[in-house]
Amino acid sequence: MAGQTVSTPDGRRLEVCVWGDPEGAPVFWLHGTPGSRFFRHLGDSYLDHRLRVVTYDRPGYGLSTRVPGRRAADVADDVRAIADALDLDRFGVAGVSGGGPGALAAAALLPDRVVRCAVVAGPAPFSADGLDFAAGMAEDEWHEWQLAVEGAAALEPSWRDFRGWLEVGLPGVAADYRSILMEASYEAGRQGSAGYIDDCLSRVDDWGFALEDVRAPTQIMVARDDTSIPVAHGEWLVRRLPAAELITVDGGHLGPRHEPEMRLLAWVGHGTP
Image (cartoon, rainbow, N blue to C red; front, side, top):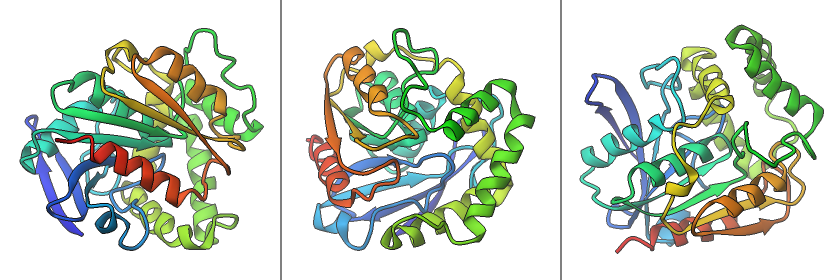
């Protein structure tokens, strides 16, 4: 891993990690909610697949400057700034869960640079027309979306609940995945609840771009037993994206799905000339 601080044109700080093969195909891997630049795949997977994987703290997480009121579309500007700093002309972009809207934003708003796109267990827009948004969603998950509609103060108890789960070791998470998720999650809270709250507010807001503008080949991965982001969300996205394919895997929102995700990232990365 190589770490780097990137300054944005408007004077903000973005904290970045680069993993895997320095000469490999470049892929941005956008973490979920909450998350940080330390969220990555196990072992030598990136080297084995000849990938140069870029992760970064979204604003308000880790060491990246907070931007209250940010929207999914703002991810494109941050990805551009990081790509410029790393001398990446063209690259793939993928996002998991809360990182999914940002991955789609980068593909829509950087069409001359994003060659392929992927979303893993990511939501549809909160205002998605023709989608029963809460169908198949666990009651506590739907409650979190409703709290986001109420505003920042309403989300603080959810953040404390997450921190409590983290402090007792993330029971219920697969052992080989738990250590990475714990590392990424502790770093996510460096600025307290800031990044988490801004993520939650952004996902019930307008995303700030049109799905029809995502022209890059895109794969949407859904998990059959996911009660956080039900399969119907991915199906809805595929129907509205110009060049999208649905991939269905076993498991729930947190997997495990290491091998399917690595095949997906290899597809995203090696679409780069």
